Length: 247
View 1: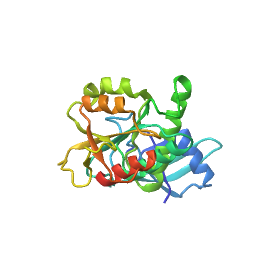
View 2 (view 1 turned 90 degrees about the vertical axis):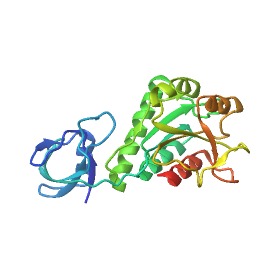
View 3 (view 1 turned 180 degrees about the vertical axis):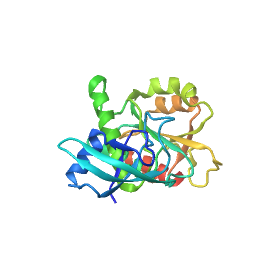
View 4 (view 1 turned 45 degrees about the horizontal axis):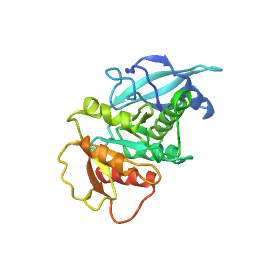
């Protein structure tokens, strides 16, 4: 059954117009009145409004730009990992960031923080950065629609690593276990690391990794260096492997 993210309050029996994004998808699929679909609304920017789980729904009206649905039975289904895992990543270049966001959403990442670092090939700022974040948020939504996830991860605005580290303690405090993906010989293996029930936040570099000074700044901010093993992985692969090990 087709699934759509609908960032509106949902309740059984409600009749509503789908927002433009979901409406376009329904029209592309050439769905007709009476056909069934699934709606979920737990996503970025909707704290306190979304319903957990998902709702059955059926199409009641198809117009040129309007798609109306009637909301049906609610199912309290959650397919999220038991542990919240966040990623802060030095943005890889080309289409690799799109791929990272898509796969991280499929794996159940809680949020993604794109970072500018000294070795970043992809340099974004201003309106271009805002448009990229909007695009990546759309990629995350589409991934959740496809994989069955009911909670869309938030893609944060692009920041420099230095600026982000300055605000890290204020933003996260003791809420997460900060871990630095590192090739340092003193790094502890991530496999077998005791985290209890703590949420985790991985800081990972771009192509070429973080610079020595950046790693030192991260450690001063409380990040513990951890290793994924003896192999040197691509930037996007390393972040996803860390997520998969803990999610």
